[in-house]
Image (cartoon, rainbow, N blue to C red; front, side, top):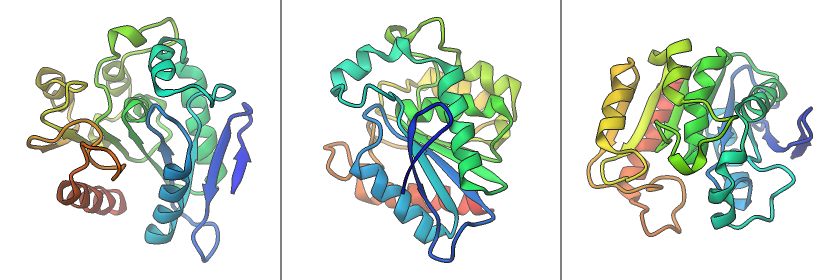
Length: 218
């Protein structure tokens, strides 16, 4: 069901069939934000895990922006607002503990969320480890600084080795913090969460889903 977070940001909240759960999961979408793909993902995760799951829009009030405009507007995003929405989405699940996962830009914010101390575990899928130059702005902090302020060992990151958004030296720096990195050889950006993308790799995606869910449940 659609809900509104205290900031006014739209979110999707799904409880498992048995009702509100003791465990929760927040999902931060990719740069394209909330759409049927993520509505379906939230429902699927709630049904498969038995957890209460919430996802929210990265660009509230600007949902009509196309992908190019969203990428160009990355520098306008503010960590305080985005991470505030992430924590509000965690509260909306009514669960404790709550984990977080994110994809692409959402994966970058899943890394930053570690610094809040709100989330038990964090699973960024191909999240940017350094803020891309075109997204740098006064409201954008660095993901590795957030890990230094939180528990880097709470991170399990899914990375494709052919992904230009997460070059090898950045991945090495992430791993050096104490985060665990799952590297998928030859995989490009976005290879897991959207089967319609040319980069999708069904076998690697299935493996990543299984390993991440097992780790979150551990």
